[in-house]
Length: 544
Image (tube, rainbow, N blue to C red):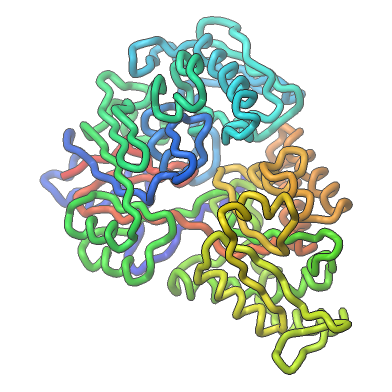
């Protein structure tokens, strides 16, 4: 498996090793101390779907919390992408890719004292499948169990998952928060009840004390925990007694609370502004950073008949007209990484497309000239009396969209930014009422992209159907099939590499920015680490 691990550069040196941390050894003898409460300030909770149930939730902040109270069958190394044992000691995958047999540890319990055994894992699988039906496929975990038909118990500590079709992403799925193993009693409750945290009990080093949507979440230390994965230096009980997560809307307030000592970790949704980052570093605190794996911040076009991007010449000109280097530096500072393809660089099987994404306004202009689009006096191109206007609807206006608008105008493309109402936001994709839209997907596996662009499994079939011509969609599906139906990692990597080439060569996607998770961390906090999905991992964290 090939993984290029990206570390965002900042003015200060960033320490991202699992055993690293801020100012290690700066207090006493430098050895970890036990006790204390860690305070973490997040971006606001999901306004429309607040949820703390592992299988259902997508919200990154919720998944960070879940990671620390609910363990998974496997874990994933952030540096290599390798899948390693956790609740499962070992596993076998059948040659046809249709069965995954896991051999479990026999010393694991849930926070309520119940034993985590093969039957509990099999019951989780049944609960996931039932939740897909109960939510009509809306539960985020649905995308992780493609082809899963159920699981059977082959012994007290042996469970076998059965798939109706090969899915090479399934092993990585077993390392994620969405397939974390919980007390199966929770599946007796409705999905809505479980979202509140009711009945949700994991086997992690912390237990969920309470979840008050949009206000706070509290985790408390579990006594007797002794089964952390080998990716943590500390595989036993948490160093901290308690972790309190709150939700703060204003970036400046969150940063100010960190600097003043009111909070220990400031965790923004978007990267810090260069000014805030410098302020944090000057205060003696640190900024930790890691790319979010999965689909980068990417534009997808509507190539349906009657839309300008149905013309391949315009699509390729659009790709050449986007200056991703300036986009990154203008919005996030001169040291921010430049996007290199449809996947962020922390994604397994990432293949750089940097050369193909080089800014080429002259090439864009020539392509449009050849296609018959001539510059008018207003600087916008036209053909047969119609201006070259591309409709980009937005839920909220933002500086990134305005910067893109300015870049495209330089080659004669009029990017029309249109504010959507709440009602329009829910329907514009289905109606095809757009030329460009943007989205992303966080998962440390390139299979994540199929849930945007493969109509067979996409969360929005309309977007997936409209993003490529039928013959292009068929090729995309064929490449996903090659990657997903093999148990050979080299073959999967080759197919995913071909997929990335195809998407850029044919201007089917337009990457805008690398997505980087940054966190401001107090100098009193040690052992900070990111998981493979760039969530906060608390196993090694302690406070002075």
